[in-house]
Image: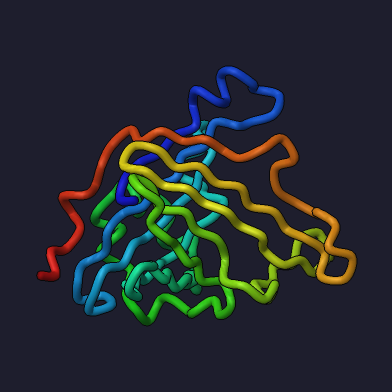
Length: 185
């Protein structure tokens, strides 16, 4: 999970349907959560300093699954670029975040991959264009790939309001940050 992922190949092969996007997951120091945490940033390749999505994530092992709590940043613009600049990353503290309840992801190991989705209940609410939606999210991670499909569905009609209508985004890992993950054993 820790790395710089890009869907460059997908965007090149089908530029009308897919923008070139980077997804970064940068490990946080062990002390941040007294465990494993990540800072994430999603950016268009042409505008690396203006992320369209940022978050902080706490990974919790629960037997055969991994539960990932999601947090938003109170002032996300202050931390733009933190996935690529460790000096900015070091300025993120627990005081800078707030929990996004009902938006946790639950991952199961399936052979050499992890498959995850947003926790059940349709309660991860996101307002887009004046419409209240709930997140429907599917993610599949391997050591070198990241596949995701996020959709926002209307809370009343369950019709898709936002997200890809052309299928999942397919990313390849360009750089690993696994060596930065704290060793907790």
